[in-house]
Image 1 (cartoon, rainbow, N blue to C red):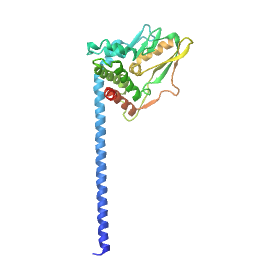
Image 2 (spheres, rainbow, N blue to C red; image 1 turned 135 degrees about the vertical axis):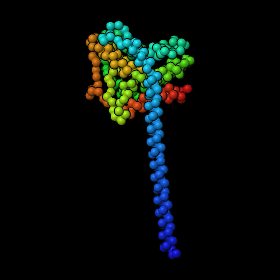
Image 3 (cartoon, rainbow, N blue to C red; image 1 turned 90 degrees about the vertical axis):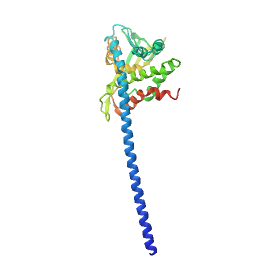
Image 4 (tube, rainbow, N blue to C red; image 1 turned 45 degrees about the vertical axis):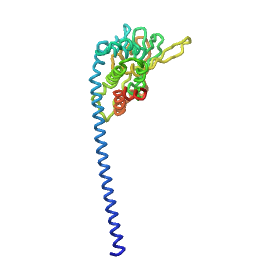
Length: 278
């Protein structure tokens, strides 16, 4: 066989090898895509299972709020809900936690009454309130906000036996209150945001300077989960002649995928945010 023939054979072999390599690469890529698809499906299934588990476990949250009832609209007497009192209402709360849970009452609270209003540890006389500013409830949620909420509980209960039990209940409460409205929503689309009172502007101090009391995650959760509480606060503000300021441009929409990611963060909050700190 001449040189030209031998070169032709070599070229053919190289072409066959290249074709075989390309086919192998395509098969590997297809296998990778299939594996990624299975992984994504498994991930969604796990997330759904986690939501269902926490939603079922969080039924006590809505039952506790139903027992508490909503304040009058407008308010005729002082009304309050707090993270500590909510978790303290759990039917299986350990007796040793009764006193430590009161430490949580200084944050994660909503207070509404005929004479005052406030979030967390603030109780502001209505005659000092300048305006109530509404915010998009879901737009106010971020990973940092959710992580910080768990970290706050961890720090307050740093040396308290049963802290992990409390953190699990916090995850149930957040999931029930923040994301219950999303059940049955289209996973691929958007949802309309929900406006809630997010900031109380008031005059404080010796010179009457304007100060602000902004809603934190736990009061935000109570407001998103309890439309009747929002109605009472706004109706009371109106009765007291306090303006309610809404965002310009109307109500926004939020990507469902973003909310599902935040929901997963809330579901797994204790494990995700405390492992490194421990």
